[in-house]
Length: 291
Image 1 (spheres, rainbow, N blue to C red):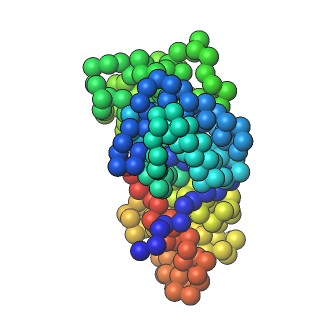
Image 2 (tube, rainbow, N blue to C red; image 1 turned 180 degrees about the vertical axis):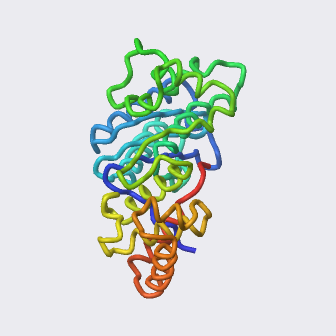
Image 3 (cartoon, helix red, strand yellow; image 1 turned 60 degrees about the vertical axis):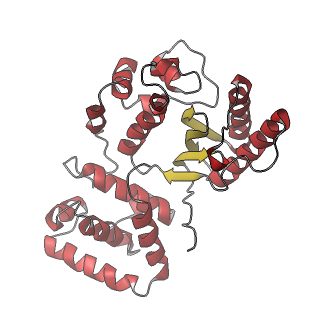
């Protein structure tokens, strides 16, 4: 079975994670952690990327990466290669250090991004739930909590922190009870997207279809005749996110019947339009929860 094509749009935000081969340790001592972060800084400068959050664990790492030019694969290839050479030379090892392919998921909504920051920063609890998260030195969490700490120039906490009233609000969300994950983020993507109970799901679909099709969210409209709004409505109805009436209101269709007709036309178009097929398949494949 062929590998799923990795989504890599310009201005994309990705959750990136990678393990040591056979789950061996990537970081043996303090210098290893420092070396990895230094190499990360080199790669960020080289490719013009920014890190919104990170957490280094013993045998794996998590990064939340913003790629202005869509170079996620090249950047991670260089990061892993630079670090692996240094690690092996220093410890007298040989052979591959990392699993061959790093994992990545495109961040398709602000709700997802906020929950992802929490997920990444809570990773150290798997080692010892008694230690405070802010004490984990190899995580960006402490830079979110303490405004006085001097963070690396390649780390940008501004966007994630903008989802909270202040740093105390952020800390409660990350370190507090599991139930806090369900707190919503209310962000409108365009004038056509109402702030109602289905906002998060439709926002996710709009952003993800735009990323797959390499277009703007504004291009996903009926008058563009590109079929993309049909893909959004088809997936939304297949997954039960919206009723036809709600989609009609959200997507500027005249009635529920008009939505049903558009969905039927989209199903027919998918039978012969290969480019639209690819958008539909990739969107459906990448839509889902975090690992």
